[in-house]
Length: 223
Image (cartoon, rainbow, N blue to C red; front, side, top):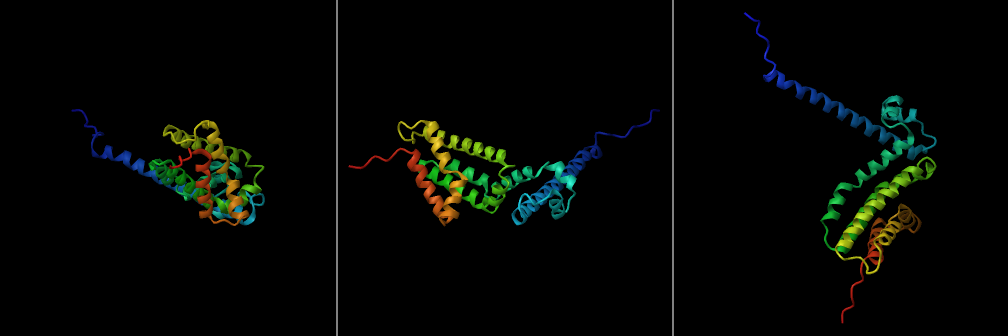
């Protein structure tokens, strides 16, 4: 009589994949916690000691991990700086602001929401301005990528206004994007808040008015 083989299609077999998935989820969560700890440590040391003076070994000690872990996860201090920028976007609730901007229908309110998002991002980023300035030589590519990302976002925004017939008559779409890109630079925010002593609210109000003046059709005077 043939030996009966264990049933591999029943409950026990079906429980194995969830256990493996559970372990994978735990590893992913641990990796995410480690990554966050490293980025937090890097930001703290960059701001307190300076970008150039901070070593990978110091960041590893601050985060409680090995230097090899940082090299494997990030590769360089410049990559850590890029991760800090991503963290700043999360702090500014980027996803929530994108949803809010998309939900607005009136051109003026669309630009106002975008101005408030720009203010929130730059306000969250302000503690790291010194990092960016000190690391300028190493972060040129990061700055270029940030400018390109901002231009892509503004292009989508201006195309939406154009589709609604809200752009100033005769203003080429590309020029409208250029105008919006110029006034939403982080340098302008720094000049306003740090150079002129404006509050972030003052900056957001000015940016809303300036964007509208630069790209939107002027309302027709009433008789």
